[in-house]
Image (tube, rainbow, N blue to C red):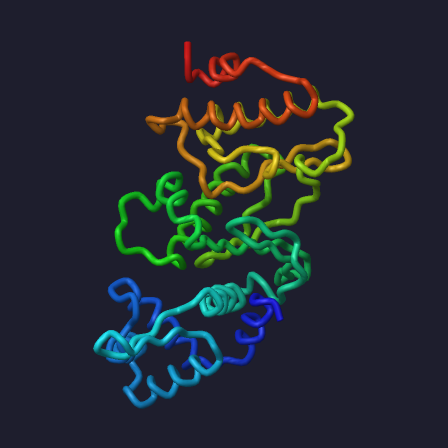
Length: 297
């Protein structure tokens, strides 16, 4: 069974005490890689025997990692238990009522259909920053900055927070980006959008027209929302049958006032230019876009 579906089942099956213990471990992980029993008991306000019973139960379910090689026995959340906490919070806040089939899978996220409290379908994007991308995350994700002790779960949470903030900020532009609904931990609930990845479309009928629309949106993001995508390429641009453009995947965005704004914006533009030149022999003047965005004179 897919991890997210197991997590959804646990949301229904776990007891209130189980969720409190999971939350206590989450709180304790700010100080400990593996949280000791005493700290978990302190945070959840349960006696040690009750806390131990809940820890044994959750460990048996496969929702915790346990380490006894530290001079004490400590406990750590895993992605599945983080899924449980995030889904439980979204259910409690009446944001979602069900998790459906997968929509797509990326390097650092999974996207599933969900059902909102009004019965309509929504998208659930689950950020999963993995260890294999550690160096890239340190280099490209400014929200990590110089933090020395930071868990992969928390990095995934920061990624989701960054994307949700971006979507909220872009929403007033009405540029067909996903509508932000809610965010909890590493999960973002958003409106569904239609479209096919630019990278997977065999041939565009009007490549120059599509390119101009992409550049127009990039300029509006910069000039009106004061944002740079910072990871723009053919894999996060969707095109629907009516040739409407949707630019997605915003966790790496940066402010237009960032000291490296020109470099970030130029990198995005080079990615777009490379794709259109290679596939359609269509190009544009990068400096012209930079001047429109008032990055250069």
